[in-house]
Length: 432
Image (tube, one colour):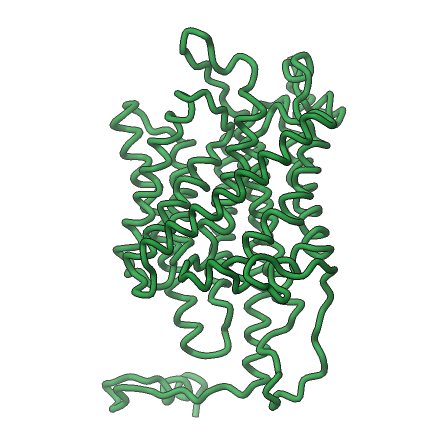
């Protein structure tokens, strides 16, 4: 029999008298392999989002601050990994007693598996740590863009230490670690609030305490545009984020050991993609209506707003509902970016509308498709995470401001932080 005929002979075609097919449950070792493989590969994809954030932010800042954004992003990813190993993972997942986990250094707990005992794990502990770590780094990346072009590099890195080592894992333990929000029925599949909301709240407090860039807002109410230096680079960054989001949401199925898990992951991919597309199209239409032209930066953030919105529940919605959820995410971004300017909150890349406002919407939208979700529990989770992050971040920012300062001098800001903070330029051949 040819290879082609071998394939045909096992396909579950109803026209061949096989209207249904049953799948045998995988043995424990096979499930362990595929579950661990899912954590690792989806983690690799989420790690690629670090490059996406870096390219997006670097493209949206002015040329004189491009190198600093690159330094911030590679630094924050590395700090996040170290802090999540030193203290973050165990605070988030180890022996959580309602409010907080264990204050200890993480270490792999795998033993030689017999794959038959009742205490056997269904995945490698190291694969789980890696997958959860890259989520922690994502929360820090959100802050980076909002406070760009005026924050001291060392102050930002110290804040990342606090965010990734303590703020993010403590609130994460309340839900994903089995704490009180989980017991209250709060649902956030892949982190619209737990990851993106935390990054958004931390970014909002930082932007307010730092203040706006010099010259951005005038006393008469006028706003001076400060366009980014490289929009093709920002577009590339958005595509990298979109690609990495399949790992972000798909990996949050937390299993790939059965046919049902694989089917769920495929549906998650589809809904994730459709939500992003819905966000882009709405952003394009609205900017055409409002400004008579297509605004590329709004379209890019529309994609991200759609992605953040679907992240709280990417499995349960129908494809049409996923498009709607993403489209509203794009709508929120287009409407709230100008709103921040009215309040003179200077968010360089639009991180707060994308990750905070669209994240709140996505967390509420879980009730549309998941019958286990209640509006009360969702609002309770949003409020608890927001209140804690605002208080903790505000304390951290103000302590840093008093101890080492958080903002560069007006002269350094005018010259560009690339020279004052790192002593090199991104585009030296084009210097005027």
